[in-house]
Every structure is written in structure tokens, then in C-alpha cells.
Image 1 (tube, rainbow, N blue to C red):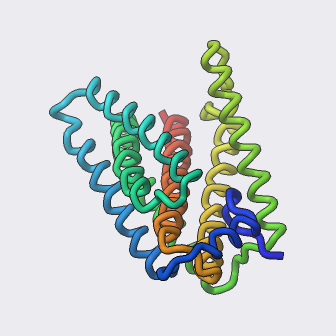
Image 2 (spheres, helix red, strand yellow):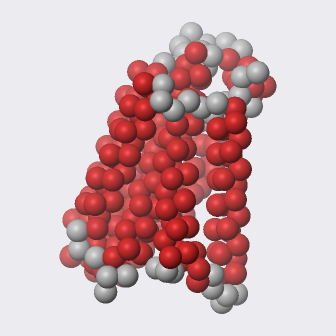
Image 3 (cartoon, rainbow, N blue to C red):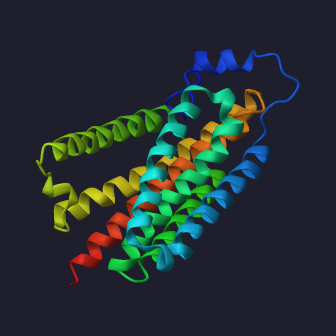
Length: 248
């Protein structure tokens, strides 16, 4: 039985979308093109914040970062549940996510000069390695692989959510955020899961194109891939910060 690599789309949902009356259908090439557009928008937005850092001050950077977080979260939710709007919401998501990434990167770079370049290099290096492994057949998105990934991502989400809720009440979870061995081990695990999630995205794009889903799924596929890359970058950045803090 076919199951989507994207946890939000079941076989029933795929069949529903594939039955839509449309003359234009999704292609892998179209998704790749839209992915490059979204990455360009994200990087341009992040660079805007980065280049303005010295002139607008830390307080303004914080405001840009906060706006980027709220706006990108709203747009991500809307895109997930209204996929037919993704050709409009996905590009705006990339712009607002760039504001968030730019702000976070500035704070990280201030503490550990050179760390952003390392994180960017590792992120894209991981991406191209997994893309090669997927295309070569070394890694396959089997049903067991998908089930394990969904379970792992669910566990990570619960841990992060619990940490956030407890933080509101002033209760810290030092183990996962610390630079100790447990904290570093946790970050390594999350980085691995984030990286392997790219395999689910590759599988989703390939299978969705085979199912001849509507054209707007090219933007949704690009959106899903961008979300994973951002997650991977942030987790790599977090891991590098933990490792660098141990050297001080």
C-alpha cells in the first residue's frame, strides 16, 4: 500500500488530490525550480537582516527575528492545511523565515565568530550527500523507515513542546539544552533525524509527481523541503554552539 513520505498526506488524501480536475500537474523539475526560488528568497531575506545588523542595533534585530518567527509559523500552518494556497503562501513563508534565520544567525555569530559559515556548509553538504544517496538507491524510504521517522519526530516535538511549556513557568530542562554530554548527544540525535527527514521529502516529491497531483503541489513540495533545511540548519547551529561553548 502506498503511503506518502509526508506525514500530513495519507494514501486517501493523495487519491483525493490526484482526482482534482486540472490541466497542469506537478513535476519533479517544477518542484526543484520552486525550491531554488524559495531558497533564494530565504537567503536574500536573511542577508538583509545580516547586513543591517551593525546599523539598526540589537533591539531592532530582536524585533525582526520575533516578527519572522510569528509570521513564518502562521504561514507554515496555513500552507500545511490549505495546500492549494501554497503558490502564494510558500514564497512569503521563505521571506519571513529568512528574517528569523538571519536574526538567529547574528546572535550565534556574535558569540562564536565563524559558526554560521560552518553551519551553512554542513547543512548543504548534508543535503547533497543525502540527495546523492537517495538517487543512488543507498537510502530508501521504506514503510518501516517512514514509521520510524514519524515516531522519532513525534518524540522530538513532544520534548521541545514540554521544554517550552515548562520554560513559561520558569522550569528549565537543562539536560537537552546544556553543553554536557547528554545535551550534545541529544543534539546529534536531532540533527540525524532532521537530516533523514530530507529522504522523506525526496520521496514525497517523487511519489507526488508520479501521482500527477495538481500543479500547486510543486510549491508545497518546495515548502516541505525548505522547512526541513531550515530545521536542519538550526539544529546544526545549536550543536555547533554547544561544542564551541565547551572549549571556552
